Image (tube, rainbow, N blue to C red; front, side, top):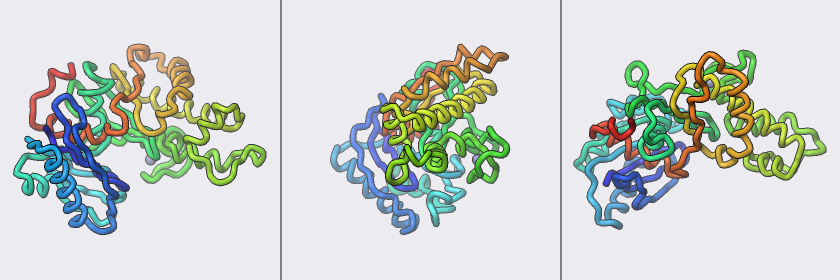
Amino acid sequence: MIGAVDIGGTKIAVGLIDDAGRVMCRVEAATEAERGYTVGLQKISEMLRSVLGKTGATIRGIGIGMTGMLDPIRGELLDADFLPGWEGSRPLEDLSREFGVSAAMENDGDAGALAEAYWGAGKGKGRLVYVTVGTGIGGGIVLDGKLYRGAAGSHPEIGHHVMEASGPDCTCGLRGCWEALAAGCSMEKWYAENCPAAERNSGPASARKICELARKGSEFAKRSVDREATYLGLGLANLIGMFVPDVIVLGGGMMQSADLYLGKIREVIRSGCRFVPAEKTEIALASLGDDTNLIGAAMTWRHRYENLSAAAS
Ligand SMILES: [Zn+2]
């Protein structure tokens, strides 16, 4: 059993994951980042003790998936945009010492990519790009079972390739990034700004609501969905052009409405990508559900400490 810790900006999930990637026990709590890292660490330790107490299990390691820019080797959070005040925290070292086992840590997009590569929709595929579309767009790249790392162990941000140079401002400093055009909140913002009064409902519409309206036949909601799918398709076409992976695995909250997007996404990809064998890239939906990041946290430990490369080939 591996202890898994998924630290997000709003919630922390802790669980025990077996060698088949199954969640044996899990608990969840609000992150309350503003109370500081020491309180957060104490909370994580208590949660881990509680799942161990409930099951009587022992763990051979702890895997941590965490939001934000981090040094995965030192296990240190570098940038605390989503976890204010946690900059410089070292959960890897702290949890390892407290529980007397080794620990590994990755950005949560990378953790999700590893989970899908070994236990999910990317199993058996050599070259995988994992894309998660939710309030933002993130993901990770796994090549022959190994996580792709940038310079100094850094995590590449696939959501921040520029698609429209004069597009909406992005949090990364550029404009018109894929995330700024196609993330859930970008869809919601565009809908709110452009929806004609006659079709406007009371209050701001969530991406889920827009999809619901599109299914009911609302013309403007259908246009929003079409725009969303077009931008998703363009971003995926870019990834195919750059990597020609065996599979792109799509996850995240927005993909709960994947049936509305996939036709257009495939059409956009088919309309371009002429200089690569784009038809060789399978577009698959993530298969591990809401616990992808938690399962991925466990996989970060196995990826670091066990020889698994054969499992993904
Ligand atoms: Zn950006």
